[in-house]
Every structure is written in structure tokens, then in C-alpha cells.
Length: 236
Image 1 (cartoon, one colour):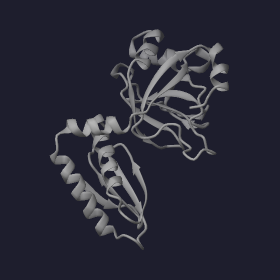
Image 2 (cartoon, rainbow, N blue to C red; image 1 turned 135 degrees about the horizontal axis):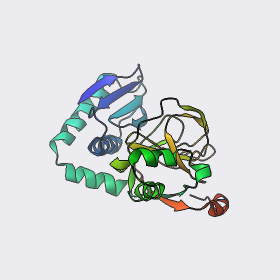
Image 3 (tube, one colour; image 1 turned 90 degrees about the vertical axis):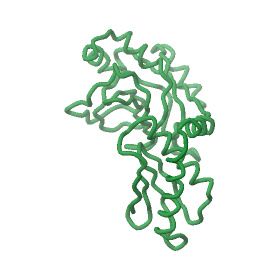
Image 4 (cartoon, rainbow, N blue to C red; image 1 turned 30 degrees about the vertical axis):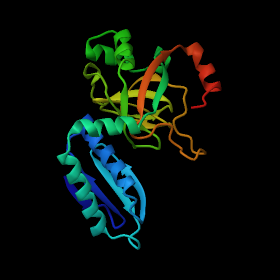
């Protein structure tokens, strides 16, 4: 457990050094407990894979006071049983968002290559990708990009040695032990295995990201013929 300054207006607490489901639970539990403590001068809470960063106003609250408070909360959390923490995170983040994905070849340029690498068929890749319930560990890289934990180990493939300069918005991809969705068109080095018609980045909404850290996510397959219907009825 490590607490350190991030510039002169933020403090970060590191609860683990390895990306894991347990680390995610601890980060989200700490985020919720800190939010409940209602510390004045706090501007934003930013949970990541293994850290929580607290942005604050130095004119209202000091770094030393925040660091001490975070250390106390983190110490209390470490002493507790993991099961109640897991239950608290699960109950608080009750949203489960279902994401339609078209895995047909024109939307999945890397699906066949990934299947070959994993030694299974493309149909098995789709089945393995749509079976788990994922957790949004964090949002980052680009606005609204969700890093999802829960990928089947058989689909764990390395990132591309040469990233693409342009990955279309909505691309569903796998990189290492994670899966995610590109919310906007951007460069990217993950293997693209499908595409969703849902818009993840909604800049004109009060909350611009469709998915939030802690949300549960399930994928399900759709055909190309069904895409237009989802685009007309995207009201999530």
C-alpha cells in the first residue's frame, strides 16, 4: 500500500502492483468509502487498475490530510475479509450493460488470426467472448474506453507489434488478458474481433461515457442485418 503525490493537486494511493480482479475490488471499495467520507475540497476521484487518484483543491484541503485519510481507509480495508468488500462492490455497481457485437468478417479483421493463434475455431472465439460477465476495471486511453476484466484465458493474445493508425469507433478488441471497445476512431494495437453499433462516447450527455468503472458487461452476437435496428434504437 503506497500513497504519493501526483503533481500539486492530486494524491494517488496504490493498493496493489498487479492487475487482477482482487485489485479492482479493493480500488472500487476504497473509492466508495472515500466518497462516503465527504472530504471537502475534493474535485474528482479517478479509479484505475491498481490505484485511486484523488484530485483536490489545495486551498481547501492539504496533501498531508488527504494522504493520512487515505492511508487510514486503506489500512482498515486491508484488515477486512475480502468477501464483504466484494459483496459491497457488486451491490453498489448493480448495472449490467448488454453490448451487441457483430462478429462477421467485415467487422472482425483479426478474428481468424486470433482463432488460429488460440488453436480454436472462429465460432469458439465468439462463444468464449460472449460467455463471461465482465467488469469495467477502469476508463482510459481515450474518452469512454472501457478496460474489461474477465476474458477467458484461451483468448489471451499479445498486442500487435505494429498498431493500426486508424481503428473505427465501435471496434471490439482483445489486447493481452483484456477486452475492450474503441469509443472513438483512434490508433490502436489490439486485435479487432467485432464491432458494436452502440455509441460509447456521448459528449453531449451529462455523463459522457456509456460505461463506468465497476459496471458489469455482457456481449452478445448480432448479424449485420440487425445493426441498423440497433442504431435506430440506441437509447442506453
